[in-house]
Length: 139
Image (cartoon, rainbow, N blue to C red; front, side, top):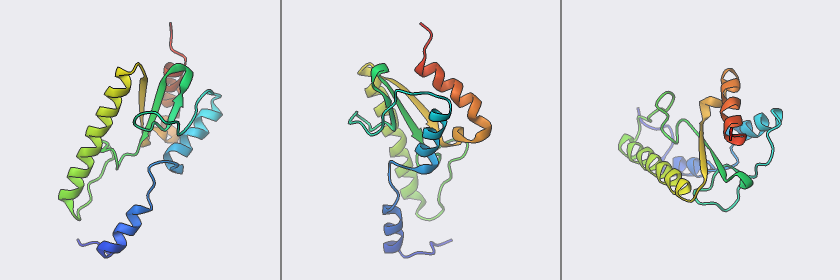
């Protein structure tokens, strides 16, 4: 099936997708953190890999990975149009994610990655437990 948009129009549409400030992922996590009174985080600080949320005092970086853009094994989909490009693009994203995680950990940061699908209401309890373990580790 061919794309319903021209290459130029598709490029314009894709350019409107931002890598931060996404209401569906980052915004949903802001709501959860506030609802469960998890404080001390900041957003968009200049840290390698541009984590979505940072707990500076804890040296904790949190990334919210979209299922499509980061290749979720459960919910990631592969576009039929220009498949070769998308396979390469999503593979590069995965390699970059691993590099960012390894680099931050080498710099003594703890890294938590959250999948977009973990933000669903029925996963909330499990996600909050995961976040509490990261923010309030047992010593």
